[in-house]
Length: 226
Image (cartoon, rainbow, N blue to C red):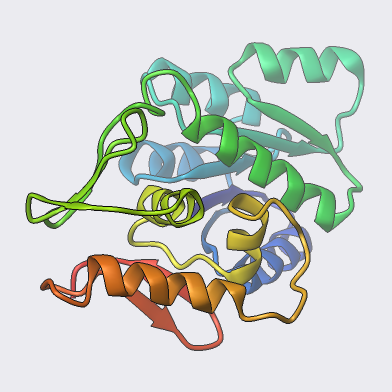
């Protein structure tokens, strides 16, 4: 996932950058509101984490201008301003969620997962046919094709492929897959993910080119053209 972190406190920014990159996210940092707004409008991010008390331009104003640009990117406001009125102003400006400092990093990760899940399931996105090279997956009809040839998948294989396609070009970890496809947050030590990845490779990659499912040792999996 590609994340924009707009945070002017160096220690907080460094802590979040370290934790998020360890979760295989790509993180850009902006230390003021003006730079944060410019990056948000120019680059395609999957999530914006936004402090409120920023030099140059407040987080509230950054959020408002992002929404005025008709961007639907999920925005999580992360700030020390925890009064009810502060939260209302942030949400009214277009933020999707609001987390008050100090916070537990695991709660931040849980909120990121929830925002991502809601965004992927939003009207207008859930039924869009997913494509990569000559592979297509229709979330509504449950039809999968490669080079025009129908691919028969089990329900779990379909769910895994859909998750990978919705995150194409990104590295997804085993924990990501367990939480989103198996709906569990712990790795039991089994090789169930590897088994299902191999199932998918046999069905959508073995007899076709280019290969689309790739393993990054120690990091996870990604779907992309070679």
